[in-house]
Image (cartoon, rainbow, N blue to C red; front, side, top):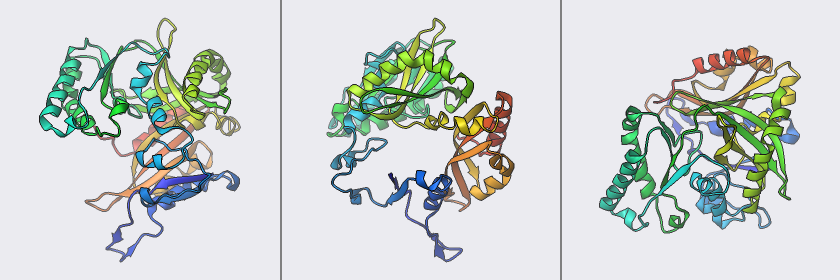
Length: 385
């Protein structure tokens, strides 16, 4: 399969070594990840220097993630506007799928209005007052976000006040992104969602065939940090048959919903089960998700005596991949750790190398798995507040 990746940036001239890195570091990193696969399973990697120069053969359909305006000029597997809607938390709230009680607060400005600073400021204030009027506790969601970055848990007045400056900034940015081409997609909105108390969260992964039949892939459990940001997912391979039976009715509802709008392929959704046992869809990931692969890795881990695995992404480390592999050489050789993604960069001010990475970690039991996970986190650079 052809896989097209965008260039991160053009190679920078290396003053110290009087050369340009060739190939660029992100090319090397991408190939090194994919070269871990057996040859017949490796995608054919291409890099796109400029998006307006992308050329495809006439009979080739592309499957972009996320939907991007310039790809409207190409034949896509799914209509991009419908795909955008399926990824929208606003559309989920207004759908027939079971989800927590949600209030949708829509913007009122047009794309032309968004050019007027005074009107934008008034609209931002209208959003702020709506947030202040919402009874605490509740969850704020922006319509498009990933890995929990746009989902805020407001548990008390202090937490609310701590979010206000960022809320004003992000709402203003969302409004100014309005254009005549996108304003019909309801891109400006906030969602106020009821907090599900004492619930457990599962990530469902499944595949929808061309006939609309859903095929279960895996069911994982989410890990979130103290401020509600997603940190990763864990899977218990011995419980997959039990969890498939538990969540298949909801999986079929989600599959029917997305298939009706033209989606087929791999996807996931996040489900919370409240204390009454109600299953509620809290997020739709109509795309290949980060933890989609965890089900297919079952035989790899089980054959090595590991019942559990843990997906961690993204983490930042000082140095390059060689430095990391030296530190965790034993775990990598034993199959307790798999590097899933890697990309280097350089700190602009100092020129020092850092890396952004994704991992899978296995364990015979939860304690063993989390012990290695904590060592990986301990080696990582601190996350920005």
